[in-house]
Image (cartoon, rainbow, N blue to C red; front, side, top):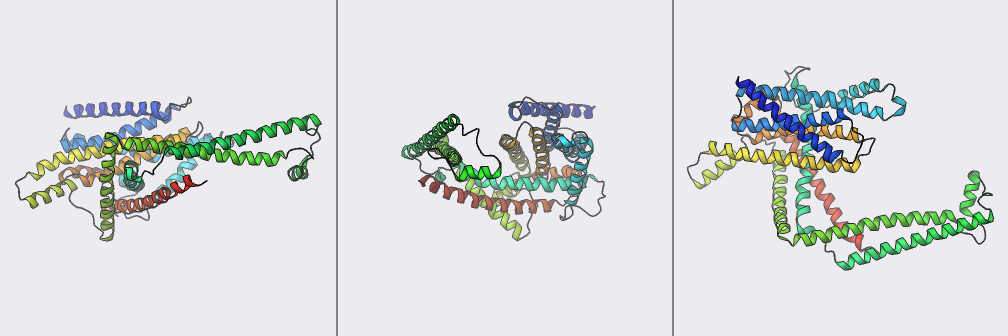
Length: 455
């Protein structure tokens, strides 16, 4: 009876997660598109639901909600379903929609979709060869074979996003990095933009007058054809007439300049708004957060370097270790086990909420940046693939943030993976991503004032 009650709780939560994923798909990703493939919508929502269910099971593990055998069953079932979606279903439909957009392959799209999926499976399987991610005793059809490869891709993605976020967050929040923008700077750039627009209008008027004059003289009908005629029209012009080709080239160059000036003007307005916002109470709060995150970023880079150099992986979760150090230093009586459970629950909850929120925001920005009416289905499926791999690898890494007694069932479900490898791999990719982001943002920040000072 308890198993049925536990299962009803899990099914209800999965329905709620599915509904939230469906609404997110409709209200955020596809709100500007009329054509919707319901199979894409269902796959995205199911991937989101089972990804969130894994995080829910982690919280249930810490709080002791549901029976232990029920949690193990739902862990196993949830993991099998998410792997089935990520390895078999999503790659196949990505290939199917890619082939569907190619008119020549439209009749044989099912065959070519299978070929693309087999190609994906080959490279996906070969991905595990260079990495020590499995125990030698695992068979080729074991679930660990799939988890280990999905984990490599997901941990790499997490480390890249974490490295960039750890650097970009203080750079975005701190007013120290804001360049000084005055009304004079904005007015000067707007004046340049207006002058450029006037030049474009003037040259287009000249072109219109020249075309009308040529039409009246009959030059349009007697225009030479062929390659040599085109060369002649570029290099020569009739006496008293305009060279339309050269004027058109000048107009194209001025229009490109006007676009750049418009973007720079919008950037200056945005920077000015950020300067004014930084003077408010909320802006000062985010400025303080920026300094906090900058310290965290330096500490994280330092610890990642130490872990890589000394090949170190923590055996105790950070919360328990921190409480033990504090208690020993202060010499007070403290129930470490009791409080580590509650603080770990809060910490893991914060990690889960911020991970889901941050990933959804990133996916939305990415989708709007590169999507179109033809590619939107493929891009949504790619985002579903990234989301599922991201969440599976999050479970691999969050496991280390949990006290030892709560890791047991997760370790049993995931199998005998080389968990230490994933933490070392995360540190390596995080360090590369963070240092690359620092270099990129430094160059961008240094070049920005020079660009606006240019005449």
